[in-house]
Image 1: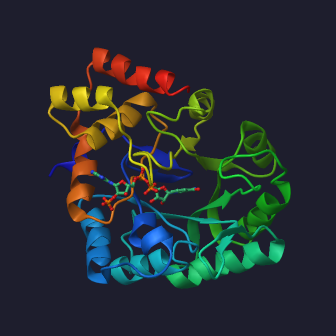
Image 2 (image 1 turned 90 degrees about the vertical axis):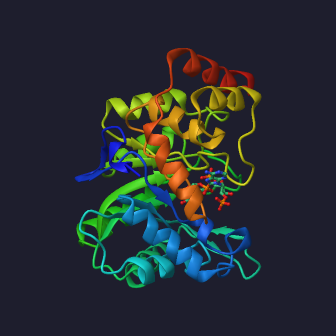
Image 3 (image 1 turned 180 degrees about the vertical axis):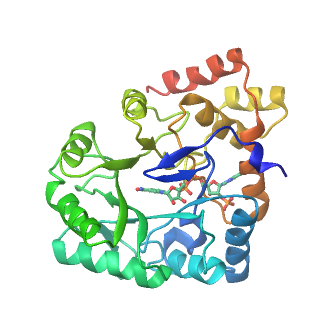
Length: 292
Ligand SMILES: NC(=O)c1ccc[n+]([C@@H]2O[C@H](COP(=O)([O-])OP(=O)(O)OC[C@H]3O[C@@H](n4cnc5c(N)ncnc54)[C@H](OP(=O)(O)O)[C@@H]3O)[C@@H](O)[C@H]2O)c1
């Protein structure tokens, strides 16, 4: 496949990356908890991603916990020079798999050291602070203290770049007042477009926007319009959902998640789909119908 045909790249700080990357969350067990059902298959997906030219992998020590980081290290270490590994801190898993906030200074320092050790790195390329204020999505609340801790670890040389995740515009502004922010990772896709204005504002400032759940996450995107466009351009609905994101804004970097090599290749091939203007217009209508 000619993944290298993917439209021009973007960057995470000083690290150039392609527009299509890979999100490793789906490699952990059911509910992102525990080991994968098929460890060999999970390792194969990671190796296939890098072989196909993926140079941006999203992970976290709270996937499993520890499972995806350990798989990445086993599959890919020593890492290619151009591979950018992006991790996130700010949460931990309960014994029952619950997602719990872990914002304290001690928890953040421990999390950064855990990621370094498990990934086998001396420096983490990008660390996202993942906010969690009770609700599932972004909610207001100061993130100054945790971001300041990451900035301190950056000055110590343990982190190259800092990003934020699951955040509001006010929290992004607060974080940018503390240190340079290279990326924002929020929930966004064809049917979930709360961040439309934010994406463009970040792009104007050279900041990458990395949508999580680009395919709908645990509930895959379903739309008759999406199906119709897919049939018309000779692609799958999931490929069209990704192609729409690539077209939506240049600062969008994709990290679709999959535990399947076939789906991985299908997703990477979305970079070659050229969506005509009227197809873009029809797809834009999905977000409007979904209420933004
Ligand atoms: N910052 C945050 O709070 C946050 C939250 C969630 C996720 N993330 C990150 O964002 C990444 C992407 O999100 P996600 O993986 O949860 O959701 P996603 O990429 O929207 O969707 C993943 C789901 O789609 C399926 N899938 C993938 N490619 C497919 C294809 N070509 N055809 C049909 N089904 C396909 C996968 O199943 P198969 O395994 O069967 O392919 C999986 O069930 C994650 O991997 C993670 O790194 C971050």
